Amino acid sequence: MANGKIYFISDAHLGLHAKDSSLVRERYLVDLLEQARLDASEVFLLGDIFDFWFEYKQVVPRGFTRLLGKIAELTDSGIPVHFFTGNHDVWVFDYLPTEVGVIIHREPITVERFGKKFYLAHGDGLGPGDKGYKLLKLLFTSKVLQWSFARIHPNLAMWLGQKWSYSSRYSKALFNEFEGASEDLFKHSMAMLKQEHFDYFVYGHRHARALMPINDGEATLAVLGDWIVNYSYGVFDNGVFEILNYNKK
Image (tube, rainbow, N blue to C red; front, top):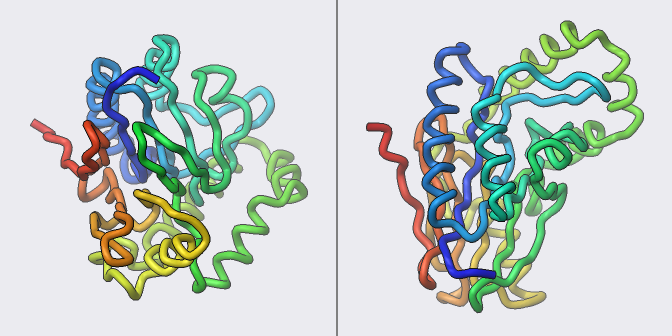
């Protein structure tokens, strides 16, 4: 793989809030991806890029044309773009790989880049807690439920999905400051280190920014923030991982 920056982005939740607000955030994200097109070797989109997504065989959600076009521009130019399904866009199927060329991941993955080992995941359902959500995730990944939802007319299905997504987003305090060792993502990372060595754990989902050494400096845990409040993203460049803020000006 050629030298270059690796970008990590999560939790844009495009489609959330008023259409104009979502479009502004989409433009910011497209601007960042244009920067990545010029200097990136790889891009990882770590989940919840869309606030709700469901594909029928012949119908996909309206909107997001700027983002999808920019991603296609990256992949057409040879830059791999990885798309992790989050808890809000778990119903991405084959449209994005076929039409814009992303590589879909539905589970955490391990990759080695530039001599460093990364553990990458959206972050939902990891760690010892939140058993209720883990059961809910099993339900939403059920083929039976997906088939049943696809029988609903798209106009009603999108309304139901967006209504559920909005209530889900504001039902939990995901925007609070990351609390370190008490967090499930921290505990999950420590458990993984007992099995094998990693240099970096990179997560979305939590909507907080965090970049901290763990296990006496053996590894670094990164939580990417979001594109609702923080407008933050991760960059690995020349052996250094940083979490940066997008300059909206």
